[in-house]
Image 1 (cartoon, rainbow, N blue to C red):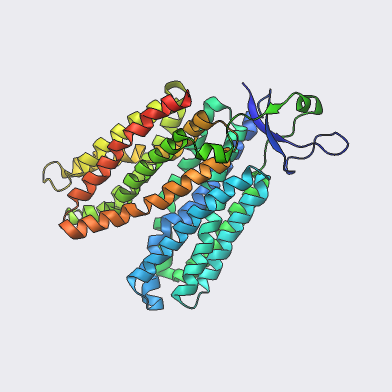
Image 2: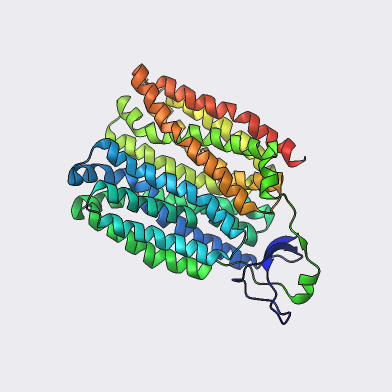
Length: 430
């Protein structure tokens, strides 16, 4: 099985260190898989800390910031918008850079910017400076997490195990969503939001930056003899890919599934409370979704090579859509608790599959050439588009005074995504 690797040659003809930028090519040998899995586990820890302390904890800071800075709820909500917007914009830039330079400076600098953003946020005198600081942190998180981690894992892990590797990476992010919010909520109550933001910055500097400086590297350069036999990486130029319908079908799949899942994820706790569940029970189901996603990342990743990424995604999407329909029964006196438990298990285990398996489908569709850039562009379009998911849910709830139309919309979006998922098989053979 061939592998994708980066090499460079110095003026005297010897293999250069992996940190020197050069051209992606194919070589006959696989990287050391033990080192590759060690890298994947280390990156999973980075995603756990960075996502768990930032993106998955933003809502915890809303009320204390509103009270302390005397700002409106809309201004406080804009903090999350600025963070997510800049994080999304940074992803294609990180992918573009990873196609041209070594991953260590890109990812370590991104983590350092995230820490700097949180340090500046803790010192912000008003909501405007705080918004700018969190925008900087969002850009740093985007440059050091999902897109670069996925792109780096494809260089180290054999293709038949990449689905599992992506599952391990996303399991780290899911674990962070389970453990950090509850801990940070208690610390905010005891120490205040400024001290907690400083602690987050220190945690990123002490854990994520050193791990990335150590781990974020490409496989060792091949020998000079191997280098002479290498062929250019297969695939399409970025401009050519952007003109191909199959690339936009892949993006449509991501957009529809992300719109559906984000709309459900943001509205879940308010919906359960509206349906009569105590706040603590609603929060427990929310955490249960993260635990189910943790299991789903491993299970579906392990079988993705045998059954195929497209088939797994079709199955997972069907299961998740049925889970959304179960959620509609939350108000039923007899079936409500069981229905929500089924939803948490089925939807929780499958809603993140698009992030896990879409990189595999991208390689099948477009080839490994410019993988980082194309993955980043796709996530940019899907990320910006999915920002309308929570807003659409809120509009429907305000207009109809019911969550049922919003939940049906999310289920419908997931059902419509079946078509572009099905077309992935056809596109990969084109």
